[in-house]
Length: 506
Image 1 (cartoon, rainbow, N blue to C red):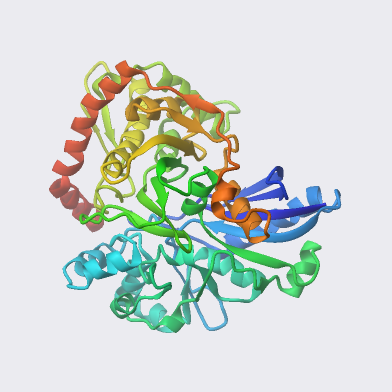
Image 2: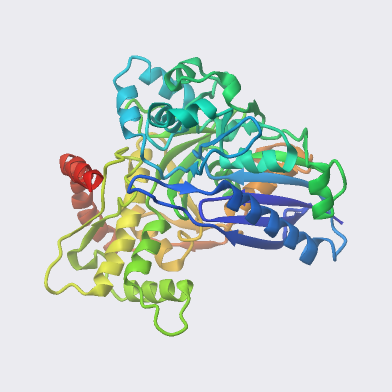
């Protein structure tokens, strides 16, 4: 029996699924790794730890499920989080940790680029907002502040590229990940010279861009031996997790939107054309040639609620982290919509869409003597989702969508889903397969293998049987509180900058 494997390298875990050739899940395993914050605006990960975790989980999945049942692995397809930067030397060795999407150290570089005449051209050419999340800003920061590492760097690659290099020996980057770097011309499918000039690098210090369907890369002989796979087992390079989550939700054309909330979050639409927004609040990334995924990301998804749980959750007894989270959700469910007037700005990691303000910070507002812990829990949850709603609200002024499909570890939790439904005032659908990134990766691989003729046919196989309906009373309540949430998010711009300056001095 034939099968394919998908490897998703996301912010906190690597998830590996096996699918049969009909797109049905055979098995899944995952492993986790930490993110380090050596300074308030820094977010880093150890590339070796991620690679070792990936190899360990992959080997275990093969030995426990695939080999005993005599499955033949046709291919391995990859997805990953976007925006990471890892400098490596000429031998492929990492020069320090990888800088990931949540890192905001490139604030000054982003501010400088916005003042330059090529700023608009870079945004419209690359589809990537000018913000510290962008690898363009991260590499520029290394050039300006870590000149020794900059000089020693042979190539600047992403974590996905590093894993693929370790497994295959090749430096390649798919068009989807490339389209999120700020360096890639999403129209001509090549590195953009203005971006290269700003960062002070040449194209040969980046990997070779290839199609997301590229399957001309093979596992090393020693890797095949370790994993018990045939020599010359090929991989499909795959795409970014955000674009594949959209495909995995069954969305490749207009009229629908998808919301993803995992550690971070995003609201996305898909189509054949890029989304034009003169205020530069949205991204335009490539799912594949001729398929664009547009929308806005938030830094502050499930990672913020996890922060709250670690600080204020009850870890007494034998409760593990998931037990603590579930207890907090039960507390939140006891409080009515609006948390009795307690609001939360969730900007613990700065913010991307729609503020694009790396200096934004968190805030509880409206606190009075009657508020209890359960109100803080509810307000924290609602603040995260107000931010998601703020993206969707503006996105809808550019693209109409009647249906919303949600995915991600947090968005599909019943309480979270109902609150989102009430905020948007629209029916929300949950895909039958909850891990839309894995499903999207499998659908892309099955298209490349010829099971589906195109991505449209693949997307049409996605089913969504569970739906949530909005409650009008809650929707009206949320709209009243959202007005205040939105005003605070913009009115505090100066105060955000002042407090960040003080935090950096400390």
